[in-house]
Image (cartoon, rainbow, N blue to C red; front, side, top):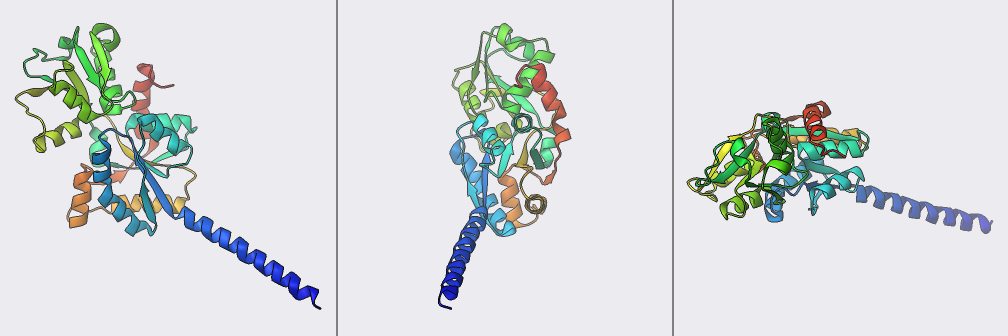
Amino acid sequence: MTAFPRSVARVARGLVAVLALAGAAVQAQQVLRVTAIPDESPTELARKFAPLGQYLESKLGMKVEWTPVTDYAAAVETVVNKKIDLAWFGGFTFVQANVRSGGKIVPLVQREEDEKFRSVFITDARSGINKLEDLKGKTLSFGSQSSTSGHLMPRSFLLAAKINPDVDLKRVAFSGAHDATIAAVASGKVDAGALNISVWEKFIADKKVDTSQVKVFFTTPPYYDYNWSVHADMPQALQDKIKAAFLALDPNTPQGKEILGLQRATKFIPSKPENYTGIKAAAENAGLLK
């Protein structure tokens, strides 16, 4: 009679411990870890994300944690290995992540602008460079090697114009980010640069570049680019809630206007892997997909 209550007490204590651990595990999972490819400075990326993070917290009912990464490859690896839950990828980094994961990375949404995204080639207004062919024998800066709009697609359009950057140009550099490419051209470190059109337009709007000194001499045809992606192992209910939150952003509300403005978006629309088959083909053509 005395042993039974003690054993019951032990079982009860064990159950309490198990339930406490389970509760802690569930609580630990109530954090959405978010990152983005570092295509701009860390401070700019954090500034752009802050209101979006607060909005997602309110819509998802969970803590949203911003986690910067050092380079594009790190963004890919953290999502493939499920150390990050939600990532802002360029078209090429999405393709890399999808290939690395065996097709397990899911693009949830993209900006309407990402259906017809473009890159620009810029140069010093006095350089005498007016078309792609004029780049022969000159120096050119791309952004990151894994950048869609700052490397892959500009390289692809150069190859289509019968210009091999590694053979026909004097030197090819990689600045690491779109804003750094603008700085490299403006300072005369390189003769020309290729970058994301939305960063270029933002620099013009903010009067951070003098267009009488630095000009666009070629704008690429459109292609699909950025998206917000997750790992397919994320519970479907959470995927649906994240997608719904992005799709609900309304430019006619103060909050929606601020977030969409910072994201350089008119609105978000659903995305799908098939949108990026052209990016994958371009990467394979250019020998950049491993």
